[in-house]
Image (cartoon, rainbow, N blue to C red; front, side, top):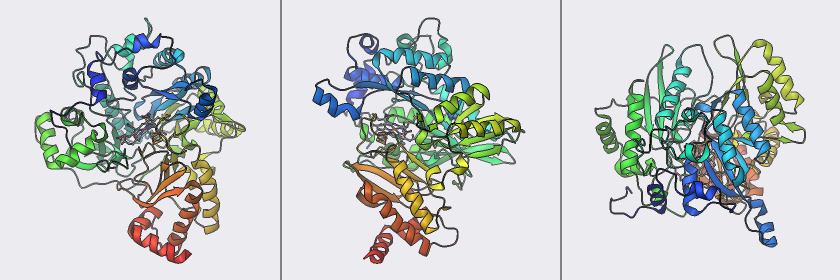
Length: 572
Ligand code: SRM
Ligand code: SF4
C-alpha cells in the first residue's frame, strides 16, 4: 500500500506544496467578507490548529430560513503531556466565554479545544492563546500532533519528570518551523519565539520540507505498569523501562492507529508493534528517524492509507527496522520482552512523593461547562485563581491539580462541592472509566451522537450493574460518533462506534491495558438497545467469569461466537 513515486499526489499534498509553507491564501481570506475559508485554506488551517466547522444542530433551521451554514471554528491547543499553569487554564476559560460557545473541552490527547469561534474572532483567539504561552501550531494537520505523556506528577524518583522532559524535547523538535503561523496570527510585539516556530526564514523546515508528513503523526510516552495514555494506539509509543527508580531505556512501539473507513477494506485499526529498544540518549534521534521514514515512504496519493500503520503492514517490521536503522545511522537493539501490565487513571488524592499532593478530578467526556447546578467552569476559575495549582490534563479527558499542600485539600474539595461538581470518588466505575468523542453538533464527520449520548447510557448501565451486583466491576467503555476512533474505541473492554443514524457497532474483548484490539460483537445496534445488549453480556459474565477475570478478558476468552450463541440460547 506504500505509494509508488508515480502515483498522483492527493489534493491535500498539492495544497501543502503550493502553500509556501502553510501560508497559502489564509491571510487574504481571513479579512474577506465571507464567514468561511476556501477549500485549500481549510486544509492548511488545520496545521495552524483550527478546523472550519458549522453548527450541525442549526443546519435544518438554516436551510429552512435560507441562511446557509452557521460557520464556526474549533481551536485546539497542543499541550505536551497536558501540562499547563492555572493562568493558562483561566485564559482558555475566559476565551470560551468571550469568543467561544461558553464551554471548553479537554481532549483525548491531553489538549484543550475551544468551539464556536467565528471567523472574525479567530486571530484574536489564537493570539490570546499565544500570549498565555500555549500554542495551536501543529495541534492538527500533517505533522506530529500533541505529544502524550503520563501526567502523574510523581516525584519519589526522577522517572516521571524524565519522561515529560523527553516528551517536551521531542515535541519541540517536531514542531513546524514555518513563520507563516506568526505572520498570519500574531501581532507585532507578541512573544514570537515562545511558541515553537522560528523566525529565521522558510528554509528552516528541515525535517518536514514543503510537503510536511503524508498524514497526522502521534507519539506517546508511558510506563508498562501504567499505560494511562494508551501507548499502543500511537504511531510511535515509547514504553519506559526502569530499574531502581531510573529509566534505563525505552521499548519503541510503532504503527498503532485507529482511523477506519468500514466501506474501504484496505483500512483497519492497529495496535503498535515492538520495533526496538533504545537508551534515553538515543530516543529523540530514533523517533526522528522513524518520522523521516514515514515522511519519505508514507503514501501521499491515498490519504485513507497514509498513516504509518499502513507502511508497516506493507513492509513488515524487519524491513521497516532496517530503514529506520539506515536513517538513524546504526543498528538498533531488539526490544525488551515487556508489555503493558496495568493502568492508573490518577483520579482522587495521591501524595506526589515530595510531601505535596495531587488530586485527579474526573471530568465527564472532558467538557468544562456550567449547566444548572453543575458549575465545573466556575469551580475551576475559583481553584485556579486561589490555589493556583499546576495542572495536568489526562488522556481520559480529565484533570489533575498538582503540587497542593495537605492544608489545601479541604478547600479544593469544598470548592468542588459548592459548585455541584461530584468528586471522583463519588462517581461510579462505569462513568469514571467512560469516554466519548465530541461528535454532534460540531464534528463534521459524526454520524451519531457521542458526547451527548454516552452519559444517558451510563445512567442506565449504572442501574443495571447495581441490580446485578456488578457495580464495583472495573471496565472501560468508549464511544465515538463515527469510525475514526477519536475516543480510542477499538481496544477498551467495550467500544461503541457510530455506524449509521442512531446505530452503533458494539465492540467487546479489549482491555484497560490497551494492548489488544477488541472484536465486533454486534453491528447496527439501535441506541435504545445498546444497554440491554450489554446487560445480557454482563449477566453471562456474572455467571461464568473466572476468579478476578475482568469483563474484557472474559469476552476475549469466550470470543464472539460463544458470546452470541450462549446469550441467544439464554434469552430464547
Ligand atoms: Fe480525532 C478527526 C476530534 C483524538 C482519529 N478528530 C477529528 C476531527 C478534527 C473531525 C474532522 O476531521 O473534521 C474531530 C473534531 C471534533 C470537534 O468538533 O472537536 C476530532 N480527535 C478529536 C478529539 C477532540 C476527540 C475528543 O473527544 O477528545 C481528540 C483531539 C486530540 C488532540 O488534542 O489532539 C481526537 N482522533 C483522536 C484520536 C485518539 C488519539 O489520538 O489518541 C484518534 C485515533 C488515533 C489515531 O489517530 O489513529 C483520532 N480524528 C481521527 C481521525 C482518523 C485518523 C485516521 O488515521 O484515519 C480523524 C479523521 C481524519 O483524520 O481524516 C479525526
Ligand atoms: Fe468526530 Fe468521528 Fe472523531 Fe467522533 S470519532 S470526534 S465523530 S471524527
